[in-house]
Image (cartoon, rainbow, N blue to C red; front, side, top):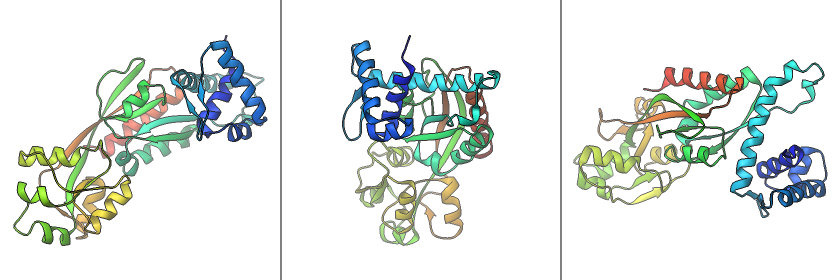
Length: 296
């Protein structure tokens, strides 16, 4: 039988990043947290926490944290049936998710708000490129993810959400400087472009699909959705912007499309742990409904 106070200590240290903050969250001393984790490691014969700033879980530690999250979900369903349980004293359950930055900047907050209002649960997000969020689920770090991966994740179910549409845009001033004779393959190789981070291949994919060349242009690295938009508006470079954000700026004359009528669509999927917990069903329903309203 697992030692659940020790597992709670592991999960708190991972979530808070230190033994001291975990102790504050649990209402015990840092020494007590350390003793619980040390006893668990001795019993399992393996390290579960890599001590540092911040403290990080080992592979086993991640799996134990995922187990704790699942147990909390199941206990939350069971609590109303326990006449002796004082639910008012229980801390809200926190679900950990992996979501891509552009979904966070556009449609996903509405789904998250619907879920949280319905359940009272709290949310913790890992922001990751949509091509890699499913890996966070496979590693046990999160309980659900928004991903572009339609593949099967063991122990999970995947729901098709639709497509997030992107438009290739730049400021009018940028277009005058870099595309005076129109947008061509040659001009795109010389015009600075914006790139979210090293795994962001949207700009290269758009150029490849529409101009049949591999993009090899000067690049500004901008790992922020709001920064990416603001840098585009300021004329620093062109980039792929979510249509939900870009269309208003185009209507206002602050952005223009490089090639109108040639959007890029990224298919998105909701992959969630296959656990019989009402909260996950509620969350999946909220995500599906909002995606149906907003995605292509």
